[in-house]
Length: 145
Image 1 (cartoon, rainbow, N blue to C red):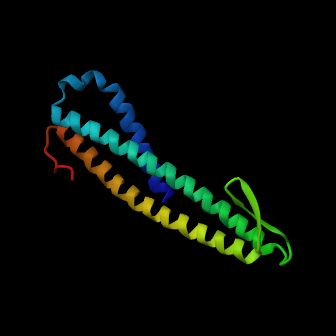
Image 2: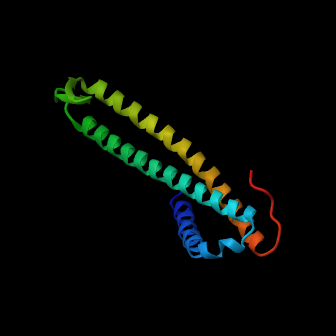
Image 3: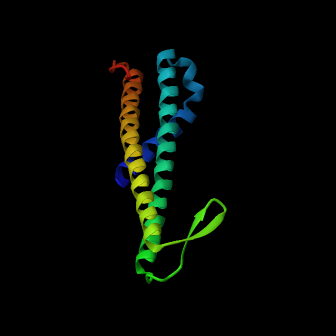
């Protein structure tokens, strides 16, 4: 997935650069294509937000898994503490392990959901990109969904 994400980011930077340099040309571009440019920028921002959230959740999963390893490696009588709001509360090792497992599962579900959004937005981005390219070349492309 990293290759696809990097690939899309490269498209973003190239298109963003083109969009910035083409601001002065926008008067000569038909309103429909100007609207597509605006939609492309919106999709780009949405995709960047999704990728940022996904990265945050992936880091949280890694942290929770490291914590699970530490809990697993600790002896049965080792005191365990969990943060509940601003308070640290002592809990049994088994309870802490269960809570960490639940946290990892929840985060992984969120990541899967974000991956679906990412895929949908990538498709929309590529579709708009081809429509704009076709319109600027004087060809017609299918309308965006």
